Amino acid sequence: QVQLVESGGGLVQAGGSLRLSCAASGRTFIIYAMGWFRQAPGKEREFVAAISWSGGSTYYADSVTGRFTISRDKAKNLVYLQMNSLKPEDAAVYYCAADRGQIITAQATRWGYWGQGAPVTVSS
Image 1 (cartoon, one colour):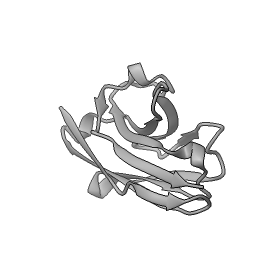
Image 2: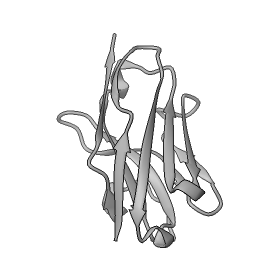
Image 3: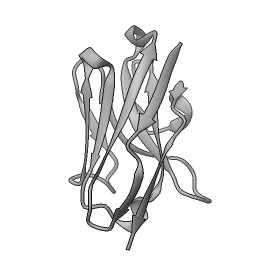
Image 4: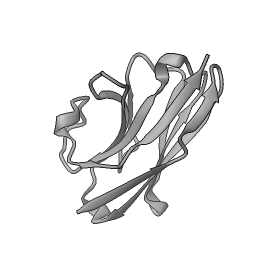
């Protein structure tokens, strides 16, 4: 299986930046894509960004396009989410996800592996 561990969450003022990291371990050779989702209190988990592990193609939710950047370091089995120009509505627990399927989807239920989550708080 694949294990995922996030780091880098915390408190930031609106307009500031944070970078989340996700370390993958285990059977990482089966990973086709990795992604980030977020879940705010009382809301459903929503797609933020994804990246294909081999080719590096990236996908973003409209709400973060132009502000967030997903990247990966294949040699170190790391994926990053650089978050700039943060807004109070970006506050949530951010989850790293991975999947072996051949389709990258915004549907959280289609992703097979999850980290424990990293809280991000944005003060106004």
